Image 1: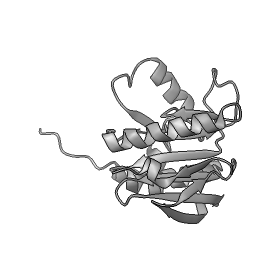
Image 2: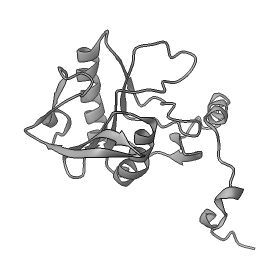
Image 3: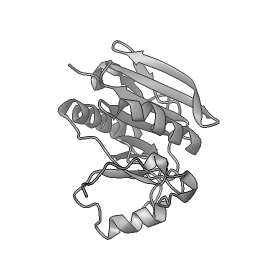
Length: 191
């Protein structure tokens, strides 16, 4: 019998067994995902999109600017795990966390999370925005490489952001928690 495609949406949610973050972390330690780029979102292991040159350039530029500006005040992490909830551990492209010792567990609070989006734009606007709002991340930026804008989400309320604005080339963005840290949009949206 040939393998037929199975639509898991046909299996009722109450019968599905989702992973908890602690179980996912154990699988990571065992090397189960060694050759894969994945993250845990709402109990499901999700493959992440490949990273292209424009994506890397935006992340590198943000990393350099933020590390220099926030030294001694906050931690900047690039593509590292964020303990969003018991069933979610995304790996945002850039995250600004409170200073602290994260040697035993991943950060579970963030001042700002930034996702750089091309092929992941839909998921970043829906799944990730909902997750970060539910987690209480006060500020979430999507560096939208398709439309060449930065989508700024603020004021999390009830699983969504009450304020969503767009910043374009020629404008700058200040981080709400650190208003002295200003990022010119054209520095991260090149080309």
